[in-house]
Length: 225
Image (cartoon, rainbow, N blue to C red):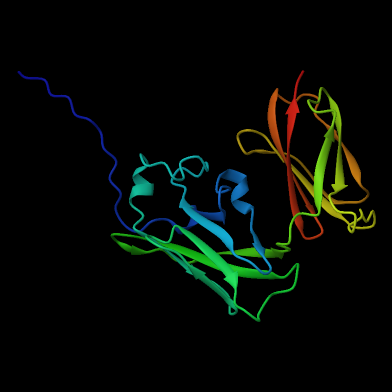
């Protein structure tokens, strides 16, 4: 009797799952950073969509992913006063407000995206995107000490003589580990700085994200024991 060995193969049947569509600015469509939804107020912003088959944010753009290969085309829905253009399958687009319809800083606009495979289009997935200034970043983050061995101080620094730190303004802080898991979150912070406790954290590089006024500020925090 002859023995036969078979190799398993995954076969996708039906439309894709719209709940696994993620989109963000270019270069940020992974894990928790798929929530990085900001647009320029008077210029173009590169938007990128992906199909996250495993729900872990790591196989987007992976040419070996069956689910990724099954996406034939992306489609976008933008609000009145905005336009977008792309080429190919519309996976990446440039979006900008039309001339004369520039939005106000802090405005929230809703953008939708859907994907198509051989079985048809998914339902729309909508995300809220915030409008920020595109004239340049006026603020940055400073972390001291960095590397941290138990406690460190995060400070918001001004990059412009015309812009000063307003200690009455509330701001939000999020810190993610290398697996894109949220390690710390604080909202409604005031003042220029705050303490970060890293005792018990694994050694490695962490991503710090701060929303201050109309800017999204990021920095890397290195933790050592």
